[in-house]
Image (cartoon, rainbow over all chains, first blue to last red; front, side):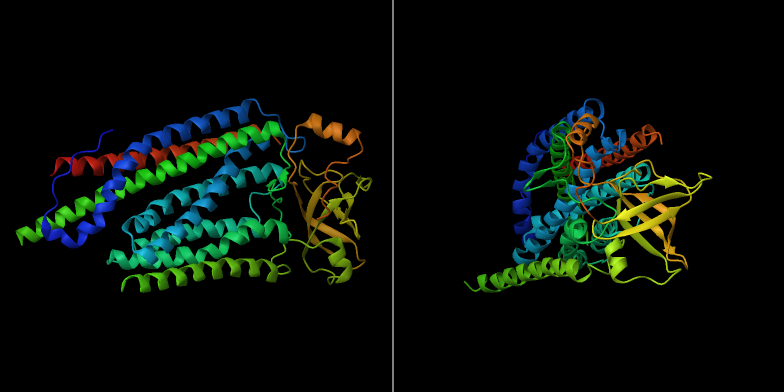
Length: 256
Length: 152
Length: 40
């Protein structure tokens, strides 16, 4: 994949020129990095899931159902990590008004929503044979659903205004306010009585047997790289679409 | 540097906002400890006995050696414990696969007039330990009853 | 309870969602970047 040579940008687009300068450099960097992230992400996911499905032992209590862990846990981690990234990007957009920061918020939101959805769906499917229920309104499950809804809220706000900058600004506020939910997700299982079990991997060590932990970490690395790759794909898309829009606007201005 | 000042101001404000949000989340965790609890432990119930007929969720470990069936085999009787207090429970219905002694369980139901807890729904809890069956067996052989580690 | 249908459902839905989103995102990116290249 090669980056096309760019023609000079007409001077009449002067206010946008500054905004585009960095995204253009960024796009060259992103174009080189995207295939690596996607290919390595899918490769690590495949190896991790393969080992998890066919080589890892069953759990002494859950039996084979434990294999859902290898997709449920990574999607939960990066749904949360992605949210933090999105909130920091919103914060950077607010402070430095850098166009790439605002672009990151728009790029991360749907990817994070997807990961949160996968976490909720696989968790529900795991809960039925393990707990005996698809869903309960305990602290962990509810706060994870709230995370998914926060992502949807951010996406909705981005598109809520005809004035794009305003919609993006409101989405940024929601993203930052929503970080309130992250410690709740994290500590709900420690401090509240929940049906969901507490964290197995902590700073003090892991209570997951190494034969299960290894495929989990491989799969998690894959999910992380895929998340980053998907965000870059979306950032490139948004940059390209923005350029098309600006070109259409210039054309209209010239015609009018 | 006329531009730098509002930028710095915005940075401080935004970081403060983020810190406040995270702090608010942590405060909420502690403040809602009782409200957000999905179940009550036997010692909570001993401290504050609910009225007969009031629906509550009772959570804890299935006490070792407490599981039995009624004579007709339809009613499952067991004791839920949090190592401080015990609550005897009877339940009629489908028992989850993971239900066993020394494992976590959540029973939804109410106390009848005679003070016996009758469950309508029974959920099995899983703890944070994941291991192959051989490892669990070896641990049990060495005197670690699996699941007894966490009294919640 | 049989475990297989649950594992198959969890993996099936995950792969479909991730794969679908990846393909759709790549298609949208290609369309946008091509349009930028072509209509200059």
